Amino acid sequence: MSINSRLKQIRTALNLSQMEFSKRIFISQSLYADIEIGNVEPKERYINLISSQFGANLNWIKTGLGEMWNPDPPDMRLEYIIDIFKKFDPQLQDVVLSHLKNLLELQKETKK
Picture 1 (cartoon, helix red, strand yellow):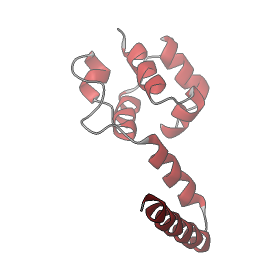
Picture 2 (cartoon, helix red, strand yellow; picture 1 turned 45 degrees about the vertical axis):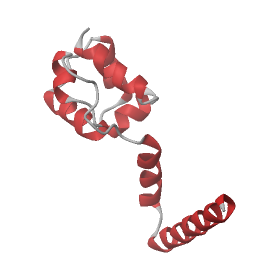
Picture 3 (cartoon, one colour; picture 1 turned 90 degrees about the vertical axis):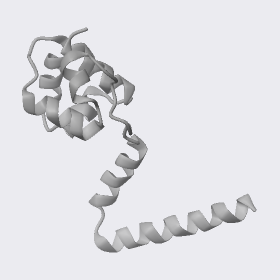
């Protein structure tokens, strides 16, 4: 399996589109598509960023040896929530935190 195939395997395992994946590594979707199909060789910095951004095993990306993921694969739902949260103004962040605390209390009550 080629490095290009391994990158696609990471992306599909995370259930991300090429657009979503490429945004997270700060390249265009068209460049990433060319990397995935093998028209462009991925630069070392893209490979390193994919490893750190998504928790993929750098050695596996480069060689195919070992496991695809570092010991703790990323929780993409949490990453998504964090990305959204960062876009809010500080006042709205406080509102969101308050709602989350209320939801947690509601969950505790319903489990009793």
